[in-house]
Length: 219
Image 1 (tube, rainbow, N blue to C red):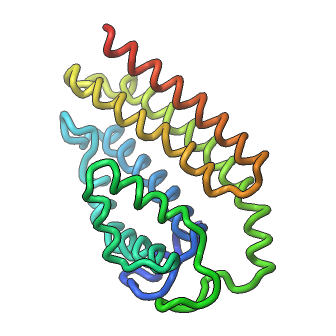
Image 2: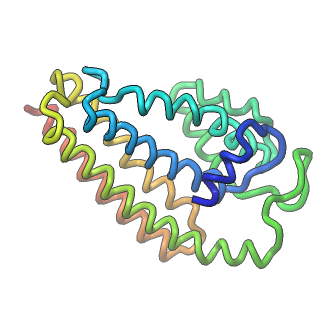
């Protein structure tokens, strides 16, 4: 939560550097709030038919787009890259993977052309190595729980959640993308045993989602 608030305080600050912990903590909390906004849209009954979200999610997305871009640019600065590198995400598939790798890359040691290393001291780095693994495992468990709950209960709560068969198939693809996130987070863990735990959690979730998607196609 503190990292999320830190990003909001630097609402439109595109200069300087942001470490991995700041960027990914903000991103994960932002995803959680986005899901909450979508759920509220549907519970209140103001979601746009056929889209699954409404004005609450729309307003939140508009409010968060600038700080989201700013922290992404600062994260690129932290690995010695220009903020313009964010546009590589426009390259289909390869660009998104390349950007994801950059976002997971550790900070340049010492000062670079964009400023001082955001990791204040070596002791803080060591503390982060010990705590990051535990934090990511907790985040992955919560992420899997909430994402599974979302796709399981939304069709029950909202009768016309799947307005068409196309929407149902599309939701499976989105769920598959969500399932890749826990595996991606494993690469940010330096402790091998904790990394394996996250890989197992993410792998089981991914296989289960893939199985459900295949069942949907075979119907």
